Length: 58
Length: 253
Length: 219
Image 1 (cartoon, rainbow over the protein chains, first blue to last red):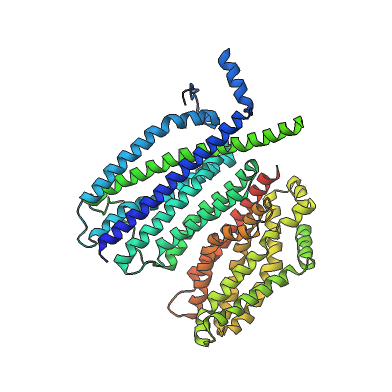
Image 2 (cartoon, each protein chain N blue to C red):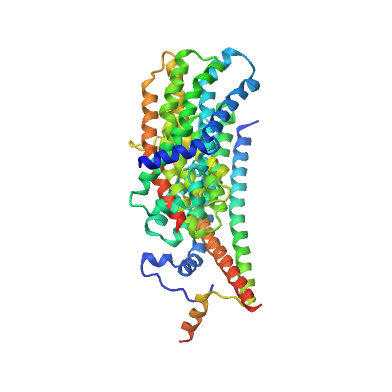
């Protein structure tokens, strides 16, 4: 077991942990956004969203 | 996101989730690019600089181990500041920020533990040493996991925000005590060498990649933190609208 | 305040012997250890103080989640929140009552368990003294956890997970003070003084945190 082995292993571990954190954050964001879109398609809006549109028209 | 974003006039405007979402959409691409560039530069430096005459190649582990350990501390400090924001100013986003930071902190603390262990094996000849630093970081890791379990067990965000904030703050004032007691218990690790009053004890050859990597990891943390806060805001909107939908369906039937 | 103390004491004694169950748990945990490590008396006397301390720590966590649960169930928690006396003081008195009902019996039971672990008289005395000084700290810091648990339907286990890392300093100084009393070169007073300081510190921030959490969860 050379020292390079441990170096490679620790960089691999860092890569995996960072990839998991990034991937989880992005996937979670996508899932939430999809849920929001589905709800919006079903005709449910935030109370303030209606007001926003009224303001835009004015 | 192409819709116009309301301008931020004062700090309290950040409390408005819509404004925060707009800000996130504008900032995160820059942060992500900066993170990638910084990582590329840091990794380049980390692998082109010379190895230490004593530790050989393994000194390169330091370039990921120390930034991860530093982030594990910074993340808890951010959570404590957010908890203070929840308790004192009742800032509505502070609670979201604390909740979003916990998994990130746990991830970086885990990384610090793993790389520390991988560094310890060739240096000390053992995977795990019950020395002061490793042990207190391990206790910190346990605290992160406990807080994550707590924030996920509490389902009503309005109620749970203050409760979780109290525990975060109690943990925060305890960290120095834990650190001190564990050091009393066992002093084996080398003394702190980067932060010293008489200047850094580490040679500039190692310091440069270390600082660049620390910057890269910090940028990565802030990028992920922004994204996680955004996800949490969306999650709360989804659950609020689900409730609304259920109420409307109830009324129609 | 005195009335609250006496009321809590009476409830603790009457409510199915909560104190007795704590002591029983303590005894069982300590008694199980020799089956794990073997009946070697020398080894047992060496690890004895540590085992007794860990047993006491686990046993005092056992009853903590009930500290505010009964009050919440029968509604007297809301009365406490509305009282004129500061909530912190009320919580402090409740902690003291809880410690007298469950912590003190553990301290009193520890010499017997010390005998089981083949500890000498000095070590037994030291463990008793450190437990007497250190166990209130566990109750105080646990009160904050118990206040959090009030909002949860099944918070007992979660409280233990959250509180145990915070009790590490208590355990470290308690055990090292007990060992220092037996082994000659190590001084007894510094760790003991630190233990007392931690107890006093937790006596402030534990009830403070618990009061904040109770207020946060009520409205």
